[in-house]
Image (tube, rainbow, N blue to C red):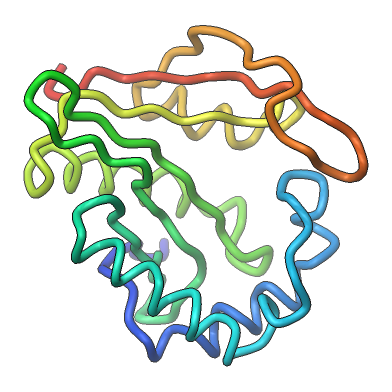
Length: 174
């Protein structure tokens, strides 16, 4: 049994993230939009991390990494944070490197980030979306108390086609 932890992303995470993304390029292609070539380099990831940390300081994102046995194996992010008292919500996104999949890390990481959303960020509602065909990701969300609430038609351009997304929600503190 591997332990799973999450923590705020750091500049030193750029190289391991780039290595995972290069190795898993084909595995993630059906689920994610095309990225520029520098996305797959440590330098490109360092720049992306710098941007994420600036948005973290501005309060609009909580960018985390997923760790197993002290190694970076993926990311979990709360984006689109709306901290206003009448909204207080954020959108959860995550990925786990292929070498660490099917070991429960995604489910545990989502559970941990839900605690961050409640305890640290003071959010009331968690949202997520999945590709209609991404059944493993849907299982992760269901196991963490999310319910599907609708379909966003033609919401993301993937693999040269507009794709529908299944929308998920969970009221925090329930």
